[in-house]
Image 1: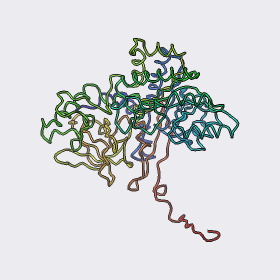
Image 2: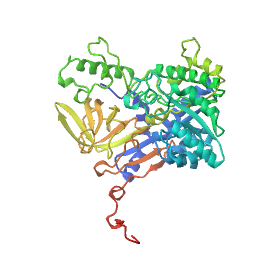
Image 3: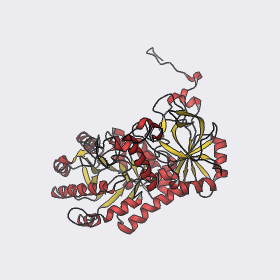
Image 4: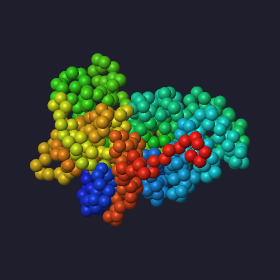
Length: 496
């Protein structure tokens, strides 16, 4: 299936910055992660433009975990973004890079004392996750002689099936947040505290939420929670709807073609040679009822009719059960600050990964291209199979497109860059350069490891002025294995 139509802008940037990219490869080698700042700025502007037109009392927060490095945080600050942080380390970096504490939201299901103390000292907004954390935070605020600005994070909403099961973060089976059934008791508890300052509500659906109904349901539940909070004497000043705004990895017709071919194969309507996924992995059809005439795709999708800021714009106009739009209801409850955290949809479409082909083979007649990635899990393929458009460089006039699986070099069977076939412009030869698109979020960091001793590659940002910023230096052999001359033995003897 053709899988290049969503990469046109990245192809143009790749071509216009080719001399700089060649110098970067000469200096840092391959593989190489690259972020085009022009694209990142365009993606950020899309969210700002929607909110400026539709709902001005808002904060767009960069989810630091999507690209955790100083360069990304510094760029977020320059673009006027806040920060969604998930650890004391991300919080420290955001503060050091000058992001205002009022624009920092501290998330996490098990915050350390250091994390809580740093947030208290800075005055950042804390998303309360559980009862133990509430008691811990209240105690530390008393010791510090201060108060804590808190959001209450909730789960238990009927939102399963919108993304991969292991990436759902607001339904019943998730480690995050208070259950919505606890809301009234929780609000009364906070209202009675002289240290906890209630600022509002928080919930995160998950990642790559392609169906707008997920956000409509989320808002509906948050509005009900706001009414309960009001009944306990609490004003909802902020509502954090989290992230999950999708990107369109492929065009709509490409995605429909892939889904129909996969379904036909799962129904046994095609030979093994027409398999579209590794070992006939059912992906979003895994939970489809057997015998259904038209089973519905459930879980993570790689196309959405409303990618990125278009999702937010569309959801604002959707009507709830009482006929009011979401914008109407926001006004009804006092026009609270709306916090959105579109990490993936800001970063992913701005990034590429350049690699070399390490080899080509066939498995049961299917081409498998092994790429010298240097790291495993280019995304989340070990827990939820991911799909990334890719190409062999340079493109040639005599190219013959071919569908192939993409694999890594690690000595683990799960090391598949794409467990769904990807349309390449041609099969590469060993040593050929390849590009993987839409890898700006999570791919370079989230599951990066030193499996099989591979060092993590460099991460660079390419500016519109033809210059580059080093966001992470490439690791060396010594970074992974240490220096034998520096081995240190620690014992129990005095002075050891």
